Image (cartoon, rainbow, N blue to C red):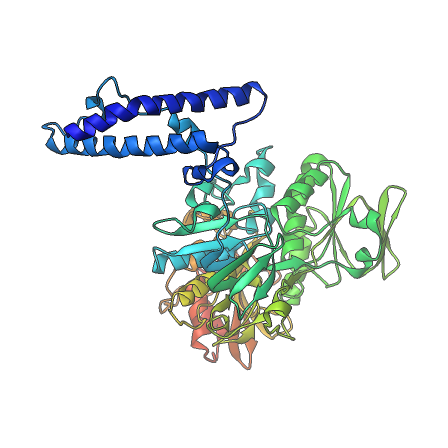
Length: 594
């Protein structure tokens, strides 16, 4: 101990002298209008290139020796002290205080670099990638997961962009991206706050692993043999296992693409947060908007903007070539009934678009039947094209019928490459080869891919569901193959005030209904003992069940204003049996009970 004290007394004056010199350098640099060039201590001994020269070299040596001697003394003092809870530093001699000034010179480090290797690399920052990351971490708690996305945002859910966000009364909703669900509870569209994630540059050194998100970067090339990818800034990242969750890009109409910049600049292809913000701004500054498309997205946006039209006088037009809303999904009679319902909120036109032009500050849409529609802005909601940009460089197969990366029942494209979400064309062991573009499928397939990336080797068997709300009073949930070209059997009953999306979320506690549905277990359902009442109006479809058949077997089910019954529908499809009387099967959903 005496030897350590002697060393400290001899070195302390030198340390203070060197510290004084360091402070002088900083002060001089600041007075000259320049910032001191700070470098890590490990680099300061390199001479002038390190920014400190011989003076800094001497300083580091002296401080290091002083800390070594002082550390030994403090350690010995701590061990022999009768009150170990007291800070040992208070026992240092007053004439030799700790060399505090050195902290100023060595605190800052060199620019941080991105990881060159990720054990789990997830390409795409959507729902599928987030679900996979959560699944990987659940099975491998120390896993290091890197998500690379070309969007500037952390992973978020897309459904509210065309649903609840439009019904918010908060004028700053485009900034907060928080919304109230039909049940009144508020939430953000982001899955997790930024504090949940590890910084990308700290992922490699993270002791307990974690999930990092590299935003604003696009993977442009994939070397499958070398197990590495190349980003758009030429950065290369190697991986052990990789997930492709690149989703899709909105399709556009050729007549719009060929119409020129004036038309394209007044057309929205709706998909991302930026699209929601842009369309919200447009809707507040124009007199009319036309939505082209009668599917899920087009109908949801038309209903949302139609609500705004009643408040601001905005003219909203929805046009599509089918006979009615959701014509490719719903049976014709239900599609027509739905169309009459939504006409109360906005104008509906059924026709094909022949051409689009910009004339006299207006967009002119010429229809094939000769009619002409003038509008200020167009929203093209005509489907999604799976993003398979990496297929060529990676040598991955793209399905010629459904599009997307072709994968097996375990969602594998290669031994260490998986695909999930909209971009995956997978083999469903119950319904055959499919590609699905819905939020719940992204959750289910992402979760399964994550499990299989950690060695689960599970096939895809859990039927994902999807839902669509045409406002707080009309909504439906569906599962399996729902195609209006298939034979259907519908069983309906009179709806009550409890049979609305708003009432459903009040019961389940979430507007993202798949969050509760996908976790539910399909049990053997018990049919209702309540007899089916005779409906007074055959054209009244308040609530009901629509069965879609292929070879007399139910392959798809829509629950029309019937909620929280998805496990029953899932089990019916999983069983794959023929049913002599589907009216009896409909009783399993208790649609005739008030």
